[in-house]
Image: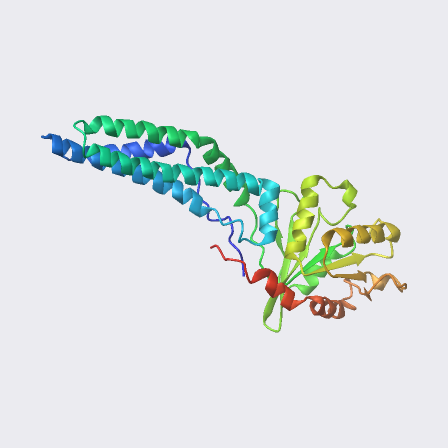
Length: 333
């Protein structure tokens, strides 16, 4: 199930663009109406006011509706939105735009009532226009902020809410080779603004259930002390997406990192990511691997042990827990 969380948010207009659209349409609504009496003038002014009111309130309401409820989206995307923009900031500015739409609707309704009992409907309409303009201008900063947020959020790749294996380990230990071996097709590259190479996402099916496996270059491939705050938040977000962590070690050292360095990264990652962990030693084709520090041994070059590793990883996914994590998610398409 692919979540199209932010992709369908349209460009958000500025206050100037909204007001120009509303008042142009309102003037158009007056054209063609013959104004020969006070009652016909009032009807023309009422039509203009209602047109402007509806366009402004509807457009502002549409801005609010386009954003998902941040209380119902998957926690993975919640944390990504918090990293890129700040969920509290988004909620405050969405609420401001909602207030503006409701206030304009109220101003229009009350002004139409005044107009029907006034001898000068044009003055009432112009006063209402002034109040509406002031309200829309008051939320111009919110509209601009939400449009900037929209430009950032809609670029986030859609990662499936499926049983997920997250891969970690130093560069050149065989992570991408493993993903290519076990995936049914060439892995997709999901580019995020806080990764250098993008997450590589592969897919496979077990008993008719689609799973995904994610390699994490630029995130889980060096000590956490070398991470900036945004990268650490992104790593934390992965725990909401992943169901099991697969950590690959190269005990031969041909990856360029000593085994002790790799095991230290394993312990840091294990503590930070918070999910079941399977540790496998790769490159068994280069020599015998021994030691109790590895759960399994494999070779991504020859394929030796890869099927057994996959069986073990899939068995470690708690499908009941996975269902609980995602059953409350509302699919906002």
